[in-house]
Length: 497
Ligand SMILES: *Cc1c(COP(=O)(O)O)cnc(C)c1O
Image (cartoon, rainbow, N blue to C red; front, side):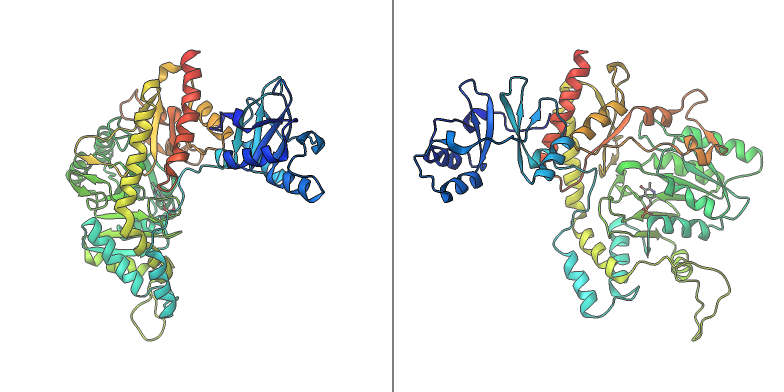
């Protein structure tokens, strides 16, 4: 049940009560709603401000008894209703409150609209500067793609991350595609990629006609297992078929074990690409994620920690690579007065308007990280007593941006992630499973996969038991309370059973 009003007595009034008393009581409770009940406190009807107004207009006076109001079939919910049911009824009836009654028709609580409004996983959270930058683009008519906001956004991201160069792209996926093209990934090539990720990490391998080989996770960071990577390198080196690149993903804001992974890549002289789409502002040994790879990628999609509604960034310390990235992503147009082409490129650049949103968002990024980390800590603290969730780890020497609060459900509590997410959904709370690993995806059923250990598939296990909780930096403490209360109810039942 949602976190509704439980002290319902103060809303109750009997039929002998007068309009004056009802008005006084409405004034005290301040919700615009009273419950007309009989001697046994059984609900007869609801009384709103509007009902009283209509009585007075039709000739009643302040001393008229409420008994003369006439009947109404009150809209109500039974105990055990879901938030989705309640919200649907409120919308159908254009009301903001619903009494909840027990089997004797006594009101046990009142649900208000804010108790049942959907809580989403992660929504855009704008600051106060975006509109200035966008307005600047309008004022100077830089609506065409590219322009001063793009240049500035590239400089500002590069500076924030601690790399020398950046190229703004239309999406993180586009940035990753250009990265692989820059590394000459071509048909017949192999690319190693974290298996535990969103498909956009792997799709560009296919765009280039290459073959992905998926690498499992380790438990310490939930990200790429150095042990699995090492085994995969050794086997491929023995076959004389090393990968053209390694794509390491930093999930939910947490960096992978970059030192170990970098060392393996260096040993075999394979370039490392960081998919830092989810980890902007997360650090590894004091350095920003995205500053380790030969090329690294960020995303500003709508659900990410900062957003341009859609967008991405490719960064590198290699100026030549980034210059070439800009060339490839503007249709590979050669410098000539006419349109001259010696190869095929893409239309992948970010627009000047959207870069303006990005500049504003970047200014609040550190606050957003602090807010998301605080959400994570509150979930962890307030749900600790149930001992049901195992939180996504943050290995020593790393700092996650906690883009999403992620956890797994302990094996011994007899409740599945599907059940937990189902219970949240009934309360209009959007949780999600963790990413389904790529080696389990039907589209990649023929791809090879290197588990953490031959008999230990870490990402399969994380996927089976994992959940992401609502983590928007703008969700507010009341909404987080609702999620925590909903989980607490599910966990108490599970623990008792
Ligand atoms: C969001 C995301 C991407 C893709 O970014 P888009 O901007 O949506 O194209 C790539 N990899 C990971 C891990 C992501 O979460």
